[in-house]
Length: 73
Image 1: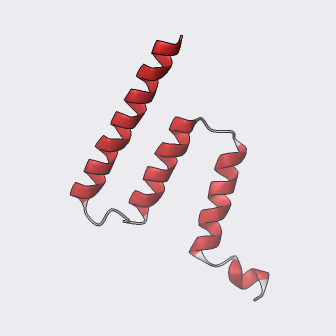
Image 2: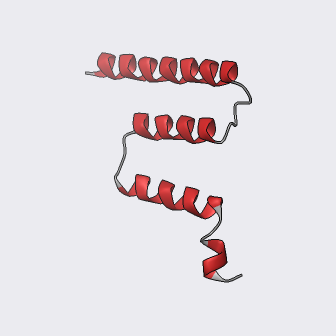
C-alpha cells in the first residue's frame, strides 16, 4: 500500500497523535487521561452513562494512586 493512501486513514493520524503525545514524556496520570479521551472520542464506552462511569473509575484510580504516593513520602 502506498504511503499517501495510508496517511489518509484515521488510524494513521490516531497513532501519529499518540506517538507525538508520548514524545512529550507524559505522566502516568496524563497517559490514563489520554486513553480515556481516546476511547470516549471513538465512542468505545457505548453510551454517555458508561463513559461517565468509566470516568469515575479513572478518577478513583488516580486518587488512590495519589494516596499511596502520599503514604510513601
